[in-house]
Length: 124
Image 1 (cartoon, rainbow, N blue to C red):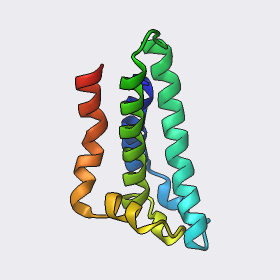
Image 2: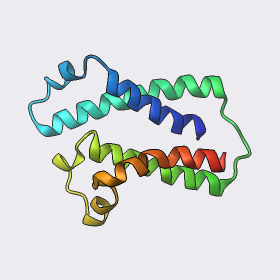
Image 3: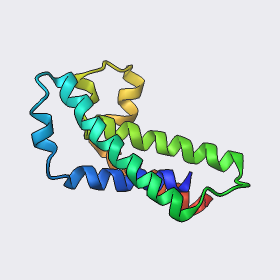
């Protein structure tokens, strides 16, 4: 779980500095296609970094199930805030208003972005 959460951050960093994003997004004629293309770039970056980190950090065993559940929820919040603020999910999907209220406000971006790191600090 630790390698996966770390790979979410590394994947975002790679996505943010990837020099060919605008060239790839030119293939998208609609907001839907652009959303899925940008999400694909991010998922590939996360996948590569996760693979490398799991090989270097190991898989680990004997973790506390409650801690893993909390870290999983924090990672899910991180993914949702990226979907809202980086990938523009609202142009493609109409999510319920309670989900919008948790992840759409700009003021919450920092807190959801930092939450998995704080969780790793206290629960790892």
